[in-house]
Amino acid sequence: RHLVEECGANPNVPSAEIGTGTLRIAKRSAGSDGIRCMSESTGRELYALVIAAARGMHTVVAYLLTAGARRDVRGSSRFRLLANMRKTVKGDGLTSLEFALKMKEAEEENGASREDLRGILKVIDMLKPSS
Image 1: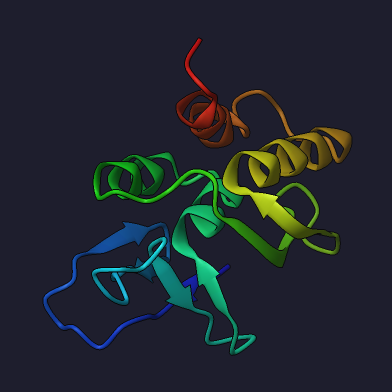
Image 2: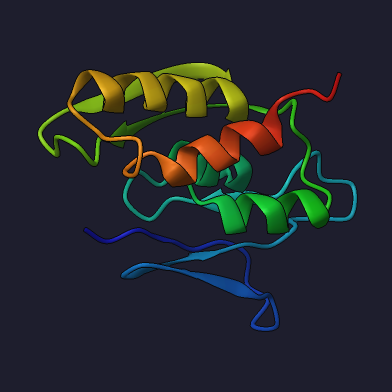
């Protein structure tokens, strides 16, 4: 499995190592409403927080939140399940938390263990509104 999402043109932007892939993140402009990435596979622009949340990348989610990513931005995409690579989860206009919850449910339905879900569970805890 390879996740490579490129965005921005700034070589000084930090990238986060994620397993066998890299998620490169950059603010498009000072007035941007979120931190975005251009997907090489689809050619569409997505919010990095949505991507990282859906994939259970808790360290990247923590970084993005610290960098000022907005939790309320919505994205539309499709992500392959880790528990069953033949299946995907599609979401239209979902927040990062909604995507993470949808992915968790689909992974559980396809046999993912609690240990398999450790990253996505951390993401969900980070993105839940504080009471």
